[in-house]
Image 1: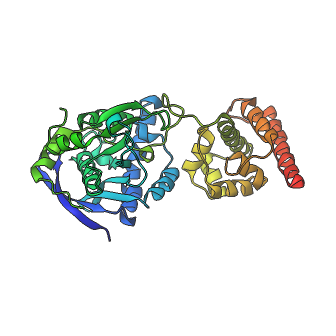
Image 2 (image 1 turned 180 degrees about the vertical axis):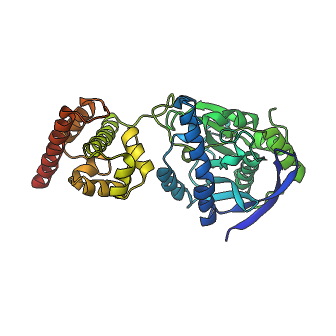
Image 3 (image 1 turned 90 degrees about the vertical axis):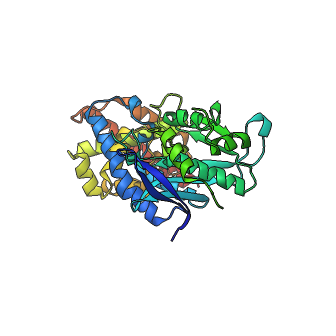
Length: 210
Length: 168
């Protein structure tokens, strides 16, 4: 059974109400089960809808270009590292897998220093406007990022984190105050974002870019 | 590890986050050639996958099976068959390749190479696969030429892969 790291609130988008959620670790079978039985059907329904509407693939959400089995295999590969979930209403609302051992910073002033590299971060499809006209909960991304920062601090990496953002999420990471180091030709041309200790402090103070 | 974050921070952050998309990392999606700037796998691998997809498509149609019917005969996932036939970059599961080799009575070793599961030792296999993949576009009814193409390719694949056995 995974353990609770912290109880945090999310916001119910429809009403603006708060709802209690838990940050837990690690990702375990029950989360993968949610992923397969609750997340996957929604993503598949989106695919069917886009196909039926004749929308060109180039305009689909980027993460629809997968095949599930490969994703499952890749996902299982990530489970050996540090993993986290956000859960409420007995469902997995978001998941994150990070690497704390061999990732190094790329921003010039912290080049080569240890950081927490976010290998994978994803919100449940019902929390995402790519899949639902009215997403359910807000705050999953921010909570996972603050979790990565907290881990970075506890590892003595001072809050340094790095990640490759999906194209549709570039704006979010820019708003988190992270430095955009541009498209990474060594990683599917996804943009690499990095957070310095100073940016992490600002983020924790709620002073990131707006 | 302790977060020690205030409830107010979480709520303010959730409001700022709004409906923003937040996905990060390769596993959050699988890139395909349709995505601008995405990494395209090495050409021979891509071509082999295309040849594999085409072979499955033609052999299926030769038997007048729908994708669903093939899925039933081979006891494999319909969605995966769709990906095999339609997606040049799809990496097929070993089990599926094994099932398809059985249902179509193909050389498993050859099909494994074509599906990119094992290393191709004979570059002629790649050449043949590329030629086969490029030979003709899919049409609803299997033409005589397509039928011949399939037979010739399967024969060549068997010959080349078996030839390997002799040399090793």
